[in-house]
Image 1 (cartoon, protein in one colour):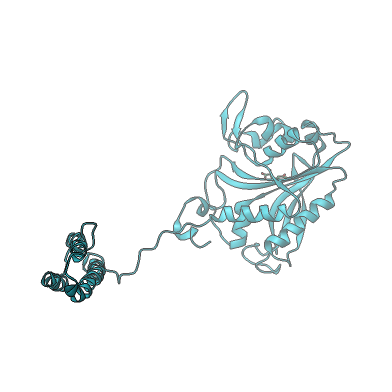
Image 2 (cartoon, rainbow, N blue to C red):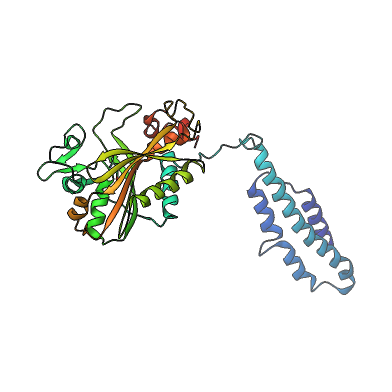
Length: 335
Ligand code: DAH
């Protein structure tokens, strides 16, 4: 029996494996459930005592050796696997494509964040709406040019269903659905039937703001937009209100900010005026409040609307509106 053990020891020492199958054969023979070494331990019990002294250590050596060999065989085969396969582990890896948040989404989030800190909540409304919500309730006279086909995409006639031309349709819906106090901003996409150019597009994005309550004054409008402008464009930003006209506000004002590129001294972005326009605004016309079922003798309000593309273009000094919708990765990955 001792001879058998010795020959197995040298067999194990000489074993090498080129495939996982060969390793498995080795494992079955020396380590597996019915392995040969266990059989020998079985026989060992009936060996005469004088032979046991020499046979015992030899058997143990065999067992330890078999376990060590199995480890060695699988380690060497696995490392060979990598280096001999068709994989060049020294080549640089392939980068997973990284996405990024669209600049319009980034600006929208920033605008929302600034107004939320001033106590505004965010409201949403449909892009397809009826004429009443988009125009009539907002005090647009019947023959107002904005209703004509060249500006508005009509979907159905009688009753008129259209793609909203501004986010002000959400004002209407909100005032009909809720009682004051209202303090909301309404971001969204709007559509106009315009020829596409660097300065105009058939769709773009706006953020509408609406505050309705008791004793809301023009001062509140000014303070709100003043605070917004400083947060958005820097703490040295000044604002200027220019008289304007919108059917749904009276009085109405265009909001300009001091040019944050040249600081007001005049440059290409502000067309040498020192000011850039960022929003339309005004006190909600009492007719609009009444159209939406709000008592205009008790409540007043202000509203504003700004273009998200416009704010983004100013912030990053971009001069072509089309960049936002062309999905050119070279442009998008810069934000
Ligand atoms: N709806 C206007 C537009 O699309 C923007 C606007 C101006 C919204 C004044 C307002 C506002 O709420 O008060 O040009």
